[in-house]
Length: 123
Image (cartoon, rainbow, N blue to C red; front, side, top):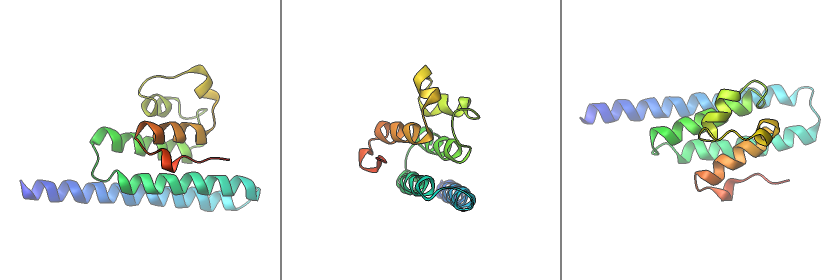
């Protein structure tokens, strides 16, 4: 039983590292050729996601999956290419306005749903 917990903890840690690397790679790509305001906003959203990744390491598999989906949604730049991820993030409650919402709004909604309004990214 202890071995299974160790394996599960290692898998969560590896998943967290992969998500953090995806965020860093995306931000690195953004830093080349984007206006400073776009990069600043993206860095604030990424900081909130990094914190959420760390804080949900001991959370349920469902919450970790939602965080994973939020990171993937963020790095894939929004609903145009992430409709299925949007459905996962919103618990299947896909609202027409949310499909047009920016990744910041979707990430902020998830932060609120997970009880982390302190991480919400504002203007």
